Picture 1 (cartoon, helix red, strand yellow):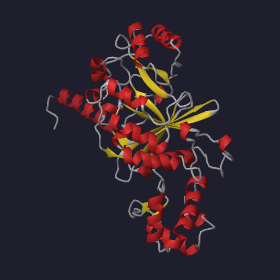
Picture 2 (tube, one colour):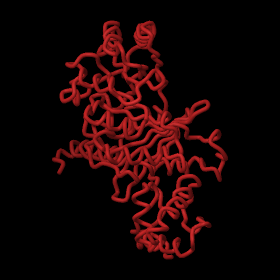
Picture 3 (cartoon, helix red, strand yellow):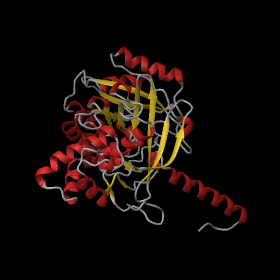
Picture 4 (tube, helix red, strand yellow):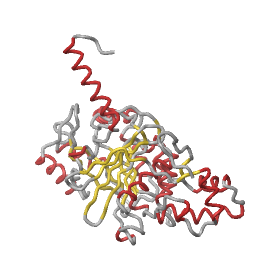
Length: 388
């Protein structure tokens, strides 16, 4: 087989991240008879997602002719790492370059006894939430299901998190949890997100517990019940305000799906119970949404919903109009919510030094372009000439 290079790029479709239907189609294209497709798919599924192989020849229980047929038309190429950054607190952030040159960011957060991977669903975002850095990047496109699943596969590669590596059993796995909280709004890419989450939670493959997968939405009300019914994953709501006028400003999607409609959808979430609570995310913005009255109204709004409330200290980014609420104010807010019977942990900011914390993600290519533009503007002013 000819090796791929800059002069001779590999144009084969990668099966890394593929779902069942895609693998079945690939096997048929490789000449596998219909009566053998299910058996061969089960074999390849295991090699891809239980063992993490990246070469068809490593699939030793798959017939040589089948391996050759697949390798002729397909590859097992991973998402390409364009950049990797490491925080002082152990957080890692990867910039992945996609086949069309666009980029996304994925973050790994290690903690005692667990490790969480924050996965993106879109290149950019269309919601323009005022406190979120990603919202300043225009939406380019949805990620495919394979690109979403591929972030988990690539992260397991980077962390040596397959059974043949340092993770010999599930108890030793570095990635134990996945959160759909990266770039983009998952429920504006619902079909691909559902397909990817079902690959991640398949017990014969990547085998993440559905209770260890959380999808965060800003409130795309019509698809909330669907994602719960078709995936069984946990739900998080990016709430951030208790009044429609303020949430209209912070989360413009609220103008389409106001708080009352959003909470009705939460109450109807499939499987909701005290054992499967909804997480409400609430970023703490100084003199904006951090008063005692806000805390009491939050408690009133969530009455009857099995819930916990994640209080998120605002993570600054260049050009943001907000600052983080003072720590005593955050503690006072949390105390009111706690006394009402809701768990309200204050999320410890992780990865701030590499812009990997909540609300800070933005493709490096966009950052570089903006920086270059700013430098050009400064240079133009010095030369007293217009910028093209």
